[in-house]
Length: 241
Image (cartoon, rainbow, N blue to C red; front, side, top):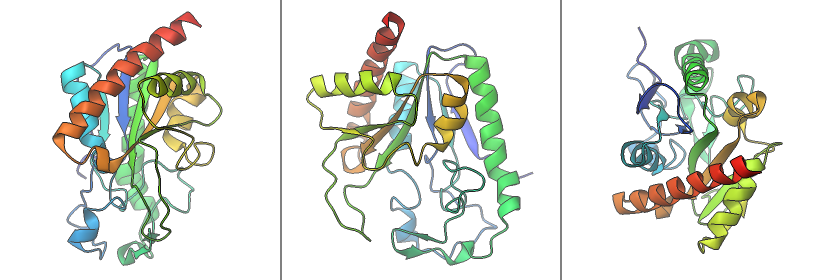
């Protein structure tokens, strides 16, 4: 059997708020050789730096159950559609991924991608959440296209912006520099929430945190607490609308 591509934290069953973290890990299975240096595997191209720490703290300290990936986005990007050209990237932020050239696409879909999303779908059906939080992080600047990204945190969305609008307002009131569909748009990159939230009419917040702010445990704890608090208030706002 292949190693699992996901793990779950928290009580099973109904939950008002849940979290999903598609890029929680930079793990590469032993039988896959990407041809990428160990140094590169610690960069944002391999995972969302700090996102797992934030998600785990939200689950363990704030009682928000979580579904997290256990496979690097360079093996297969769980936050892409099956037919996306970027599903198994051959380059990322200017770095060549030689082991993905001619990779067994269908094999990786069957081993990692489909089990991840099948389990996520069943978990969400069981939890029946009133709000989904999708936790990601972004780098302050891309190496291949340097430009400052001043936002501390951002909300992404495609068609359903119900929860995002409340979150943007509430985070702004707390003094955060908030991006609205920045540093990229959820109208182009929103695969997991399109599939598991928008397709089912479930409100969600797709959250991007600048990774230098959550590179330490202290930063992860701070942002986990802040997001958990804001999520609770978003839920109240949704219930009252």
